[in-house]
Image (cartoon, rainbow, N blue to C red; front, side, top):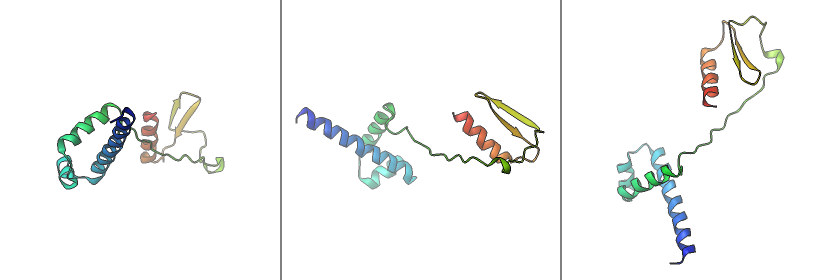
Length: 114
């Protein structure tokens, strides 16, 4: 087998096992049950799982977010906030006494992930 053909088969194998790893994670099945149903080697599955996790082969995920600006007239802020968070970059979050705790928690988690 030539070097070029060997590289192509390695790439194809990598894609094949990435697809199996993703399918198993999505299936909700245990690794052993997934391998049994797909008639693939459990040991080969484990080998590729370890190999691809070392190279970051299946650890990267892009999560889309949507940020919509609210028109100033819809923001009910009279300057009297019960809590003001001052963030780097001249950003601040002012919270009144009737704020949504769930929304604030989601915002703080989003900021912490940055």
